Length: 116
Length: 112
Image (cartoon, rainbow over all chains, first blue to last red; front, top):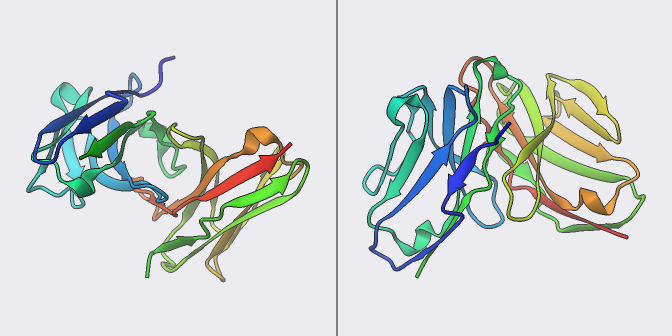
């Protein structure tokens, strides 16, 4: 079974440019998460989707970040315009309805962003 | 103060050593406790989870939770070079949200 797929794996852009990351979750997983991981830090939740509905976006900086999950499957995270401080790894994860409280999220390999 | 505190290491041990990794937390509402392992340039993967206080063993790994002290531990016996990774503790409040709060991670290197 294929895992969570993310692209691109690496992206280098200049500040003020836009960037987008794409995520394809594990088939059948209704919950999708975007996490931000700074160097030497643990992942921090940006947004969580239940199917196509964003149920927790309280940590998403909405002035420059946006996300969508059309048809409740793939998701895109966009940053416009990017700032130097956005350099980080953007992790996508998914879980199924039965994950409950086990905390089992399946993560992709991440998209590493460098803003120059 | 962060909700979850974890010693970032790095921790270097010889092969075969017993490793102890720890996290403390401040919110007594946390109910479920997990350990994730993250290899370099990979996403985290769930290693173990426990509910409330107690111990849980899985092969060479033992997870321990002490809710009275707000302290959780992961022990690795007979450590192997393949155990070299960053270990992240994580916890959530229970219920349907499954929103995890992660520690900063401890970088472990097992020397052959």
